[in-house]
Structures are given as structure tokens and as C-alpha cells.
Amino acid sequence: MSKELEFIQNRKNTITENRIENIIWYIIECYLLIVKNNEKYSKTLIKTKLKFENYLRNRLVEDYLVKNKTILIQKISCLNEINFICEAEKEYIDLQDNIIRSDKIDIYINKLGLQNEWKNNDENVYFALECKRITKLSDSTRYTSDIQKFVNRKHINTRLPFEGQIAFIEDKNINHVVLCNKINEILETHVTIVTKTPLNEIVLNNKFNGVYLSVHERNSEANFSIYHLFFDYSNIIDD
Image 1 (spheres, rainbow, N blue to C red):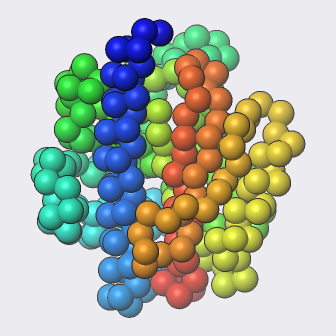
Image 2 (tube, one colour; image 1 turned 60 degrees about the vertical axis):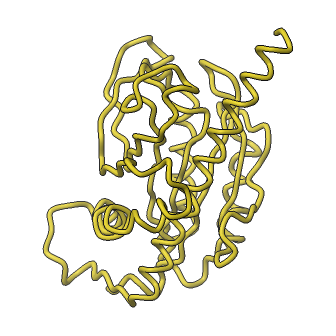
């Protein structure tokens, strides 16, 4: 790669990473609002046909991420058109059999203002987050299954080399450090997930501890990073 192309690639990655980390900062701000507002979500009293995991995701997106976007825009004005959508569908190629399948995304975020960097329509450049409830430590295996999904899929639209995962931790005995250690333990011996860098804690919001970054090898492309958000929902969830 020429020095000019290397410069362009590094600039694209730097701008993209900064954009994503501002979005992560904002998601944390919305979680802190949920805590401040003393929200309570009851597994028994709430009448819904949704899986409770999806209900929690919807409350975060519809009640907070969508409604408080001015907080994000005040911090980074180029995200003034950002969209947060629950359970969007995109196509991907399954690298196991090369068949095009439907990719259901828990939280789909587009209109990131990155069309110039990625040479694609702004609506087709997106950031995706997957959500999992952690009701017991063994749910770490389910959480890791989403990393497996990221690894084995070749996306047709412009999926950024950054992914996101949210854990709703419902067990008071599981903090973010315990969960991180368990996930890293699973990854260390995983047969098909190639982990370049295990989960390491980073600070993207000074008011919150529980953000981790890991790097993995995607079977179809170069390495990609995952931002992990471990949210304590033990006082938010009611039986």
C-alpha cells in the first residue's frame, strides 16, 4: 500500500472510530438516565408478547436513545440525523455455505455522516449492536454466540469494522469484571473465534465503568473490533 493510500485508510478508520465512540458515550448517557429515573421493568407485571430481552432493548432504544438525541448532537453536531432502530434486517452471506440470509440486528444505527469516508450512501453505512440478558454467569455462552455471528458473516451493505454488544446484567452477584473474565475464559479456548485482543476495559464516559474493547478476526475480511457495554440491571428488573 502506498503512503497516500495508507494515510487515507488511517484517516477513514480514525474518523469512524471517533464517531462510534461518541455513540457509545451517548448510549451510556442514556443508561445513566434510566438509572437516574429509577426505571423498573417487571417480568411478571408487564403485558407483552415480546421476549423480555427484546422488551428491555426496546425501552432503551424507543424511550431513551430516540428521545434524547439532542444530548449526542450537542457533543458532535455531525450526527444530527442519526437513526436508532430496533430489530432491523439486512442481508449477509453465510460463509459456511455461501447462501444469502437475513441478518436480524437488535439495534441498527445509521445516518452516521460517514458516506464520504466509506464511499456509500449514508443510509447504507451502519453500526450494529446485539443485546443479551445475563441472568446467570452461564449466559456468557449465549453472549459469546453473538461474537461467533460477527465472525462468520460477510455483510452485503457497508458494515463497519466495529461492532457493539450490550449485556443487561440482572444478577446482583455478577459485576462487569466477573462477566468480562468469564467471556475471556470462553474465548481463550474457543475453536472458531480467533481473538486477537481479549476484552480489555476502556473509558469512554467518566461516569461509567463497564466498557470493554476486544479485537477478533473476521473470516471474510480484516480484523474487527467489538465495544462491549455491561449494564447493571439488577436494580432495574423486578420479578
